[in-house]
Length: 280
Image (tube, rainbow, N blue to C red):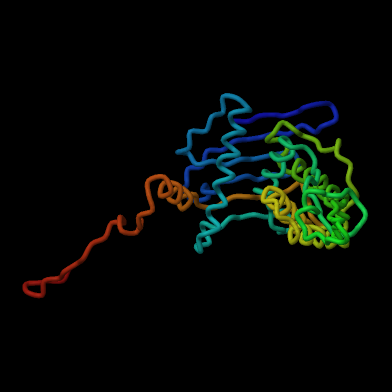
């Protein structure tokens, strides 16, 4: 099946082709290949791919792409994830998908986690201040350690990084969510030194946050930034596996139990009779 996407006059037209993979020689790759505005998606022939509408086919594409990461646990090169841009940089595809979904649900990053410090200027957190140890002097109760909530100095930078990650994710996979252009997001030009700045800021924020949801968001942002390169050609990428059988076996095993699948492999013992044996 072939499909064409075009949201508005300012966005480029994207051609999508869906290919059923037979798992025969030279026809075993399952995954996605993108070159310029041409997208080829390859799915197992046993998968009931619904191409009755673009919306349903997108759901199937997302489902299959998310299963491919299972192959990372296998040592056989046939089942390893082929994940690269045209310059062989690794693709954090699942982080792209997570970031887009998070953006569509929550919008751009806003830090709601309080940074609490003592004896500094800021808004007094009376609850935490009163829970401290007071000093009693001449009938007066004195709290020497005033707890205040202050603004995180990294907030603006983290927000900038998040906008960049959203823009990058939409450039790569926005078409899956009917977003063919990220031109509405303004970001700074990318260069090598800013990558190091972004990585340092994300690692620092990760080390000081206790919010699990925020930590997950930061980890995906870090994966995206670490995969960036000045030489990266965003118009060409490959993500998939040369054999889908291992992934299928893992999914079946997760549904029907954790038995050792090797016990069910066919096997046989051969016993040769020495008496009366006549070779061919």
